[in-house]
Structure formats: structure tokens, C-alpha cells
Amino acid sequence: KRLDVDTFPYCVHLVSWEKENVSSEALEAARIAANKYMTKFAGKEAFHLRVRVHPFHVLRTNKMLSCAGADRLQTGMRGAFGKPQGVCARVQIGQILLSIRCRDQHANVAAEALRRAKFKFPGRQKVVASRNWGFTQYARDDYVQWKKEGRLVNCGVHAQLLGCRGPLADREAGHLFATPARDCQVPLHAE
Image 1 (cartoon, rainbow, N blue to C red):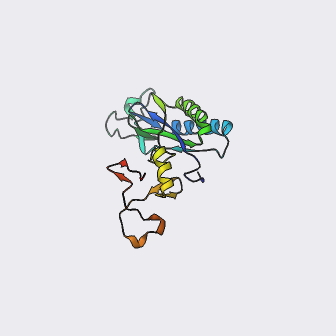
Image 2: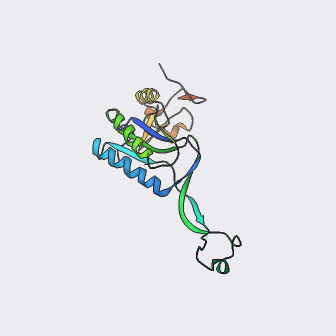
Image 3: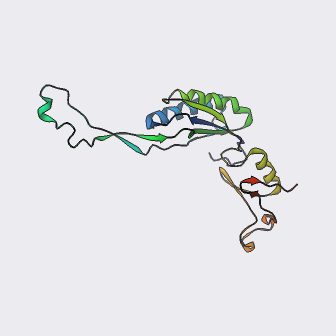
């Protein structure tokens, strides 16, 4: 996590293929399984694992008594707002659950770690290799090209792409560009 964006170019995601609730316990079990496998086969400092969903949704249950004479004690569906039982994450189809960024030599290990983490979740998931550089939103070849042009500024885990707009007084000498880096999300490179 402390290493910068250039250290880990490869990224692989675990993507949900169903609309469902994923409990906080399942997320924690999957994180532990993936982390343990990566630590064993790639090394403790050779990857960055990120859980991409957060369990904010509170699950509640209206407890019912099942003993003799229970009908005298409880009121059925009157005042049925239950007590908190746990929390879960509401997950959509195609939403990323876990992501691992690592070096290219550990690509197979990362895919296997997420395959093992799949077994902790209900429903269907897929392991997908990303076309982007690490956790950034830029494609790998575009990232390398923009890095050569000096258009990318390192921001820890991410990188900021410099365009040609904004006040010139706020820019450094190496960060002045005549053309934009992208036009309608299509990368433009100075050849």
C-alpha cells in the first residue's frame, strides 16, 4: 500500500455476476483468504489488495418466540421493525468486489488468490484481468506513453493526468502542454 503507482503495473479484479447482498463476514473471509495466499506465494511486500465494497446496509430481524404460550407474549406483525443482526454490502452485476495490484510476474498468483476468495461469497463471481495500469483509470500503453511525455504526476496509488487547461502561473516549467491529453476520453499522443 505504501509503494507508489509505478511499482505494481498489473491489476486483477474479482467481479460480482449477480445482484445480491454480501455480508461483512463474507468480505472479511475473502480478504483473509486472498491475503494469505498472496503472502505465501508472492511475498508480503509484493502486492496491494483492496476491498472495493463497503458493508453499510444494516440487516434486521424480528425475532419470534417458539415456546409454549408464545402467542400470549408477542404481537405478531405489529411493530415488526427488527433488531440489528449484521451489516452487508449491496452489490450490483458487474461491480468489483476485490482488486489486487502486483508486478507482472505475480499475475497467475493474484488470479489464483482471487479464485480462492470466490468460494467465500454466495452467487457467481468472475476473476478479470484489468487492461489498466494498477489501480489507475488509464490503459497500460497510454500510461507508459504519457509517462514518457511527462503528463502524469504521481499521487501515491494513483496518477494525475495533466491537460492543457488552467492558469499558467500555477504550473511548473515541465508541465506546460499545447495539446490536450484526451479528447472525449479518447487518448491523444504527441508522436
